[in-house]
Image 1: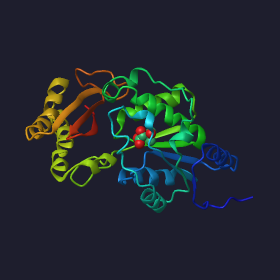
Image 2: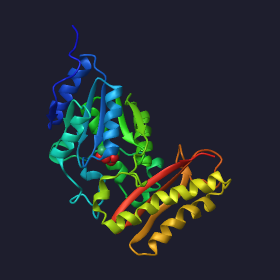
Image 3: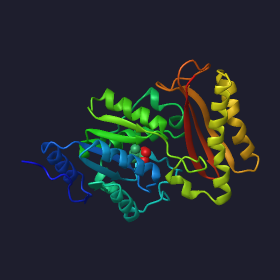
Image 4: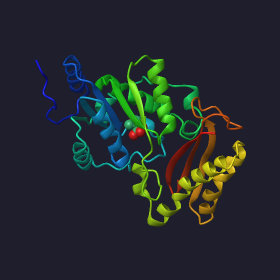
Length: 292
Ligand code: PAF
C-alpha cells in the first residue's frame, strides 16, 4: 500500500493522543521530525521548520511555554503568546501537525521527576538561571516521548541548550538525531529572539552591542589574537559603550571550549564566545564559535 504523500493538518493537545498518533506514523514507516518551541515564532523558528520539512515525511511543531525552565523572577507570565498567529506561520512552512498541550497536561499534579545534565548545564546560563536546564531537559524528554521523532531540530542561538540536549540524547540512548541550525539574524545583525518584542526602539538600537561585541572578538582573532582575556576585552568594548547610555548590563561574557564548554585561556581549537546581556529588563543571549 502506498502512503498519501502529505497528511491533513491537525492540532493535538493531549499527550496520550499525540503519542498514539506518533506511534501510528512510525508504524506506517514515516520519518518524523520535531521542532520544539515555546511559540512566538520568528524567522529563526521558521528556518527550523523549513529545514525539518526537507528532512522528514512528517513535521511536528510543538508549542509549549514550559513553566519549569523559568525562575521565580523571570518572564513566564508575560512571555509572548500567539497560538493562532504561530500556527498560520508554521502551516505556511508545511508542517503536518502541531502539539500544543496545556501545563496541566504536561505536568499533572504530583509530577516530581526531573532530568539533570551535570557539567554542561552548570556554567553560563546554568549559573545565571539555576534549574533552567533541568526544566529544559525534562520538557524536551517528555516532548520526545510523546512525539517519538527520528530527528529533532534546535537553534544554535541557544548554544548551551543545544549542547545539553545533544548530551542528554546520547547519555540516555534516545536514538534521536539532533540537528543544530545556525542563528538567524535581523538585517542589522541582531539575533532573532521571541524576547526582542520587549525592546523599545532605543533598547533595540542598544541591543546591537551584542553582535558588535561578537564581531570585534572575531576581528581580533582574525588579526592573530589568541589570548582569551584579550578577545573578551574586544567583545566587551561595544557592550560597555552601550552601557554608558544606561540600562545595559552584562550578565556573563565568556569564552569556552566549543564542545565541552570548559573554560579557555588560549584559543587553540574552536571556542564559543557566549554572552547574556540585559538591555533594560530583557535578557538577550548571543554567541559565535571562534575558529583559530
Ligand atoms: O528553546 C526553546 O524554545 C525551549 O527552551 C524549548 C527547547 C522548546 C524547551 O522548552
